[in-house]
Length: 253
Length: 313
Image 1: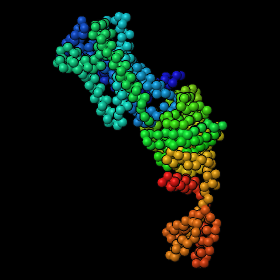
Image 2 (image 1 turned 90 degrees about the horizontal axis):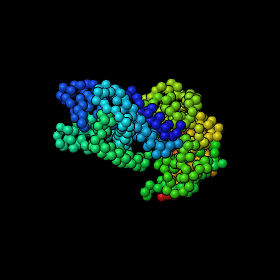
Image 3 (image 1 turned 180 degrees about the vertical axis):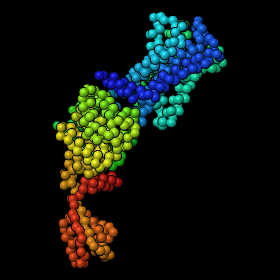
Image 4 (image 1 turned 120 degrees about the horizontal axis):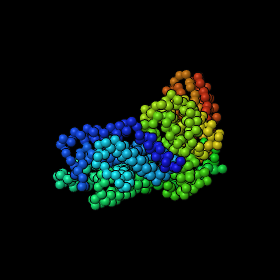
C-alpha cells in the first residue's frame, strides 16, 4: 500500500465516528425536510438562471455545497488533533514526508467531500428531481465542484489549525469563519432580492461559488457567471492550498 | 559495525548552541544510554538523529545512510518513541496498535499476531478496548512504547520511555528491551533514572550544555571516575565533639546526619576508614553498623556535571 493511501486510511479511521456521521447526515436532513418545507409558505419560487425553483429544491442543492464545506472541517481537526496529541511529530518520525502528510489530508477531504455530496444528493434527490436537467456536464461538474470546494475549505481549515494552539481559540475561530461562510452565501437564500451590501457579501464568499456551480450542474444552467465562478473557485482553491502547504511545511514540532 | 556515526555535529537556534560539535560512534546490537540534565541537548540530538530536524553543521550517518541526504530511508528503518505523549485519542488501545502497524505497512496477518503479542507483553489486555483518551498517563506511555514494536526496525530511539510507569511496569519494559537487543536491535535510550541506565545500557554518554562530557560503559565509568567510595557508619549515641575531631582527617568529605549517621566520601577510603575507626575506638564510641559501597553511576553523573559546570565558569 502506498504511504499516502496508508495515511488516508488512518485519517478516515480517526475522523469518522458516530458524532461526525450524525452531524453530516442529520443536520442537512433537518434543513432540507423541515426548514425547506416550512419556509415554502414564505418563499414561493426562487429564480436561478432561466429557471424558477421551488424553495426545497433550491435549499437541498444548496445543502450539498454546505455539506462539502462542513465535511472539510475534518482536515483542520485532524491537523489540530495531531499537533495537540503528538501524532504530527510521531508520523513525521516514521516513513512519511511532510508532502505525504499534506497530500493525505487533501485526499481525505476530497473523499469525505465527495461522499458527503453524494449522500446529500441521494437524500435530497426526491426534493429536487422535478427540476433536474441531466446532461453530459452534470456529473463532472458536481465532482469537480466537490473536489475543488473540498480543497479550498480544507485548506482554510488547515491554515486555521496551524495558527492556533488552544482548543478554545481553534473552536471559536473555526466556528465563526464557517458560520459566516454558511449564512452569508447563496446556500440558504438567493442573492437576488437581498439588500445590496449583503448581496455583495454573498459574492465575497467562496461557498456561494461552490453552491452556484453545483446548482448549475444539477439544473443544467450554465451561464457566463457560472464559468466565472468556476475560475474564481479554482484560483482561490489553488492559492489557499499553496498557503496551507507552506504553513504545514514550516510547522515546527 | 557502527550503526550511528556522528562527526562534529552542531545545532544552533539563533545564538544558542543546543548541540556543540559532538562526535559519536555507536555499535549495532547494544543499548546506548544518553544521559544529561534537563536542557542538556538530549532531545535535540534525538531529533537530529531521527532526521526530524537538520543540523547546523556536521555529519550524521545512521545505519550507513547519510541522514542529511536520505532522511526518509533512515526513517523507514528506525523506530522512535518520543518524549512527549503521542496517541490517537478516539481509538481503542487494540485499534491504535493495529492502525499503527497498518501505517508501517505491516500485513494484516502480522498485525494481528503482533497486536496480540504486544497486548500480552505490555499487560494491556485489560484495557485493550479502552480509548486512548481515557487512559492514565502510565497506561498511555505503555501503549506508546508497545506501539513502536508493531513494525520491524534496526534501530530504536527511546526518549525517556519509562516516565509515568510504576516500578513493576518499568522493570518489565527494561527486560523486554533487553530481550529485543538480544535479537539484534540497537537502542538509543535517554533517561533521568540512572539505575535504569546502569541496568540496561552497554555504553553511556553524558551530555551537558550540548557537549559530550564522557562516553564509556557504566563499569568503565565507575572504574575510571569512581575512585571515591562512600563509607556509612552508624553510631549508637550522639557525641558532640566527634564532628570536630573527624573534621581534622584529610582527603575526605564527612557528613553527619542526625548526629549518629556518618557518611564519608573519599578517594583514599581505606586509610580514611582506618583513621575514623581508630578515633572512634580511642573515644570508646560503639559502632552499630558499617557499610562501604562503590560510587554509584548517579554520583559519577553528578560529579561529571559539577566538573563541567566548574570548567565552564
